[in-house]
Length: 158
Image 1 (cartoon, rainbow, N blue to C red):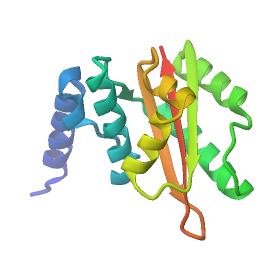
Image 2 (cartoon, one colour):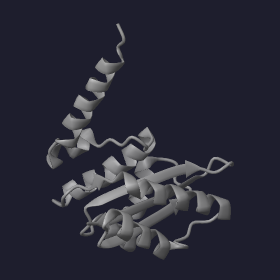
Image 3 (cartoon, rainbow, N blue to C red):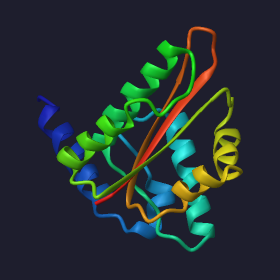
Image 4 (cartoon, rainbow, N blue to C red):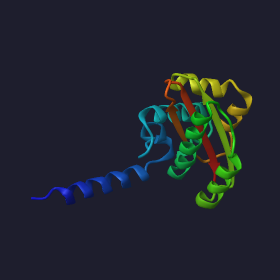
């Protein structure tokens, strides 16, 4: 007997269950098909901070990932962090994700999820984005060839 239909039914059931979870359960069920475990850890820490401030938690939006991936690759190629071409990323997300407002945090050199999130929280502008009136986010964390981490975190409000 072919088990493929059973696998498909199981996957569909799981995706329906996850998509119907309440926002209050978001810290435990925050998942993404394209984020690494390390990235999920960072996203969870950001949502834990928001929850501690009695703010709504962000939801992962997959379409943001294409922009965070592209910009992180760009920063690695340049060998420095930047917000270069932010307007292009913002325009893409306005058109493709119906984003009304967009913000971005970047970083490099931090070697743990806690360190990068604390770095952002200790910076007024970055903390303002994390605590801002946004609804969705996503993140890319990648190492360059020397093992240094680069991060791009984008927030949007639909």
